[in-house]
Structure formats: structure tokens, C-alpha cells
Image (cartoon, rainbow over all chains, first blue to last red; front, side):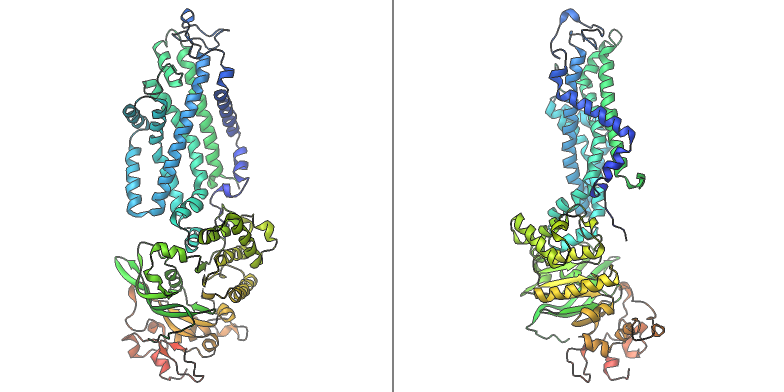
Length: 288
Length: 337
């Protein structure tokens, strides 16, 4: 007989031990913490106003005054980079939060109800999955118009399907577990069983995948901003900065390179973190 | 078919037929089952795997899978209402409240992400709509009642911190939380070792007296039956083949299947060399013989047995026990044992 615990979260400490044994997870954690702190304290850290134009110092290379140089309007690249982190993180976090809530709800409902409803929902999600994320985001963003809220909504919609899939699979196995059957025998309704007895037993899977897809959401945000469907100028966004820098790539390399590096580091941090978390909850990869 | 209009009856099942769809055709897993569960009694249902005993319990709580299973016929009268006709909403008010159930596997029947106290309190909250503090206090009282040591601290523990026997006690506490009239126990001690099994059985019996409830105890273990039951229904291939008081059944097993079961049971007062397995197996649902379902395995088989399905009849045995019912005309006709 096995004392089957469905996830490591039910054994306190298990997740943390597996996570902290992975050295790369620390790199990801420290990197992400640094980026989040920079975003929070942007007004204190930024040496200049990110929107302040200065015609005299246009396209200046990195110097003591402007560490990462200036753009074609004479704005400080470092300050714009620092403020841009706010948009990237907010968009990535909120879009994933929305996608996770809707996707997990849909996945649990489909898995628990099963039958034709399940087939219909999963069929629709397959249709959504068949579009490349960027293309789908582009369509939705173009339909809604360019603004911060619409960008978040567009990215959230593109990420619903994978979350629904992640939530559905454990639901199907959990609903056949004895404690769910026992719950029905004790008179619990379906909503209660899904919320109290199924959701907490699979939430860790969904949250861990969330950290991986947040990286993808941030890339999508940058791509949409690059195309011009992101947060409208003059607000500083990493994708927007790359596009502006792209026009001057031969004269002023620093304009496109530094925002690209910022995206690279953020996505890398989230991926390292997500991989470590995923390994930590995967029983096949655990040394125990 | 004899049905005594028993004033003492808590649950009266008449002609219950539970069917499963196999290959597009409905096959009965429980056939013409009629049982009366009386107030404060323990009625044991005994039978081997596939005899329909668990399906009977699941039918009473209407917990059969939505697709591919149905109650085809019969009624189950409980508190003046037919359970078979109730809506799903009315049913969920009965489950865990007036009729509760405990399961075979205590190791996996508790939610690993909630403390045992929360799980017991949850049952009380949803059926009685009392404030959380009151439900918690009641949960603690129940844990003490089922004799969990140091209940005050263990109420905050998670299921994985409990042993199998302790978890089954927690399950019993959850089942008793709303003082049910009927407790359905589906092999509750099968997964436990023998000493724990005896403790849990004794406790169930004490709680039955204290709460004045009736227990429908499903088991394949005749030793457990001897220890806990007042009356016994022996099931074979979805039907009751013999129904009798526990002493009568062990003293004068009349149906050939009951007799064979008793011979296959190890006993302290007999050499284990005399154990006889029952040759053959239960016929599959999809190919029930038209006559007596036990006929293919029966040593007393007559040509008439394979033609018509025998009815459950009163046994006119020496003690004059009129509640002794047997589904075997051959043996009832007085053929010597």
C-alpha cells in the first residue's frame, strides 16, 4: 500500500528541498528578484526622466552621463530600460494570472464533467492552439486596439489553452480518487468537490507552468510592441525600444542591444525558475 | 416474494435492479434485490467479488457512474420517500447526512491537502450550516469519540501523518458527523491488519449503540460477519441467495453456495486441511444462465435448476425461524444435506 500524495506540496518541505538543490534555480531566483526590485523602485534608481527629450544629446553613445547612451530624441536609454521593466513584468504577470484562472477553471470543468462537454471544450482549445501564439495575439491586439489593458487581454487569451490542458489531465485522474468518491458519498456538491478537493491537489502543476509561460508572455509583449501593437509611445517598453533602435542599428547599436539583453535576462530568469520548479514537482526526476 | 411490512424498518429495498451497459446492452449487476434494514441492527451482505454487494451500497446512495449505469427497477423506501426517485439535489442532502458511507481504502479516502479537522468540519458545515467554530468543536468531539489519542493536537494533522487504522477512524468520524440513520460500510476493515480490524469493528458496534443507527456492512469475510452482524444476506451473481439471522446462518446454512462458503472459511476449531475451495467462478454479467445462477457450480444440481430461476422462499426449518429465506427449491424440498 502506498501513502499516495499526489503532489509534493502535500508534503511540506519536499518542494523546497528539491528546488533548493538545483543551483541554476538560484541564478533564476536572484536574477528575477533583481528585475522585480528594479521595476518596483524605478523612480529611485533611474538617473533621468525616461520621457525627457533632449535634442542637444541625440544618439549619444554610452558615457559617464548616459551609461547606456541616448536615443534619437535624446532620452536616456538606461532610464527607459528601467521603466520598461515595469510594463513587461506587469503585462507578463497579469496576463498569466488571467490565463491561469480562466484556463484552470475551464480545464477542471472539462475534466470533471467529461463526455461531450469535454470533447467540445478541448476541440475549441485545439483550434486556439493551432494558431501560433504571436499570430493569435496579433489578431486580438489589432481587433481591440493598442493599449496596456488590451495588450494584457490579448496575451491572456493566447495562453488560456495550454493552462486548460495542464489542469484537465490531473483532474481526470483526481476525480477517480477515493477521496473524491468519499466526498460525493458525504454529500459534497460538484462545485465544492472541484474547488476544495481537486483544485488544491493540482494547483502546483498549474502555478509551475505559469512561471514558464510568463516568459513566453513577456516575449509576446515585446514582439507586439515591436510591431507597434503594444503600449503606445512615448511610454517606454522594451519591444518598442528595440523597434526604434532597429531603425538606427548601424549608427547606434546600443539602442537595440540593451533592451534585447533585458528581455533575454528576464526570459532566462523565468525559464530557469520554471524548469527548477517543474523538476521539483516531477516525481520521476526526484532523487527520493 | 415475501415482503414483511416491518414497522421497525429504516430502509426497505424492494425488487432493486441495477444495470450496467456493456457493449450497448443493459445487463443487471443486481437483480430483484429485496432487503429490509431494521432500526439499530447490523445487516451484513456477504459475497465474493462480482456478486453485486458493493453495487448495492452504491445504488442506495445513488453514486453509480453517470454514464453506463442505472437503477432499472425497484424502490428504496427511506423515511417515507423512494430514494430511487429523488432528484440529485435532494440526494446530496441525504448523502453524508441521513445515510453515510465508509470505504475500503482508508489510505486514499482522505484529501491529502486538508487537515483531518477541516475535513470533518466540512461535512458538518455543509449539512448543518453551523458557524466554523462550532463545526471545529464538534470535529474535536468526534475525534475523541472514535478514540484518536491526543485529539486536540492531531486535529491539525494531515492524513499522511496518520496510520491506516487511525485514518479509518477519521473516516468513521466524518461519516458519523451528522448522526446518520444508516451507515453503509463497504469492506471498511479489509485493508487493515487483524488486530486493528478487531478494534475498528468493536468501535463500530459501540457507536451503533450510542447513535442508534443501522449498519449495512458489506464484506467477503465471514469471520467479520460472525463478529458484528445481526442478520446476514448472502449474495451471489447479483441476487440474495440466503437471508437469515447470524446464528441460523452459521448453524444451518441451507443454500449450497452458503454451505460452500462456510466450508471454504478457515476456522480455529477445524483443521485447515478440510478447507474446500468452490470450483468454477461467478458467471459474467453478460452471460447469466437462465435458471439458477449457481447451478453450474452446484453439487446438488437437478435438471429443473437450469430451466427456471428459483424464487427466494421461507425455510421451514426445525427452529421455526420464519425470517430464514433461501433461493434453492432443491434444498428446501428437504433433500438431506
